[in-house]
Length: 165
Image 1 (spheres, one colour):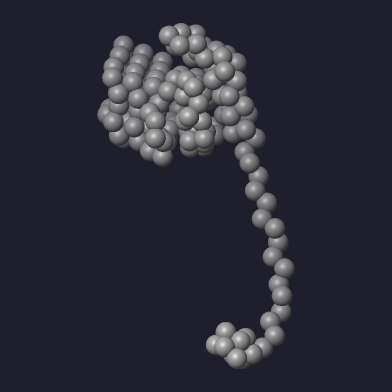
Image 2 (cartoon, rainbow, N blue to C red):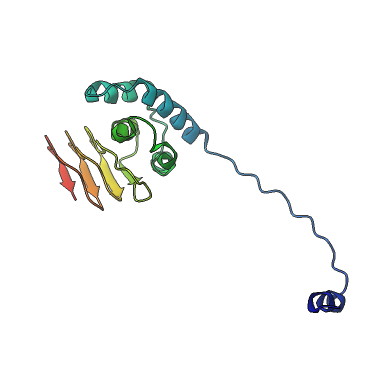
């Protein structure tokens, strides 16, 4: 008899306990944002930033999206970073933020290998970026954009608010 068998004989017969299944409910707003983002990426036109921002604002942004929905989406972006035009994602994020009723937002980028351009584009609110931002962070900003890491070229271009890096 090995040590494990001795141990089992000493503790006696154990009652089997059935554990309830864990059910995970995914946020339907996050699913809706992700579906819209995938469509938006497919429509992306390079060098048409204002058009892409306006498309995101009109077609895919909703006032009902909370700051948590948008923060969760920024975390979810890790699965999209190899997609074509990912770098322009800041336009989509900015549209979500500007359309929302909320005033303060956290965008998490520290888990991403690639940077996101245009975070805080045409911003009118408070955006706290936890990590790095790409080029044109806070472009045309009228609110506050605070980047906890590094920012790329032209941060704060045409800024009338506050951009902190």
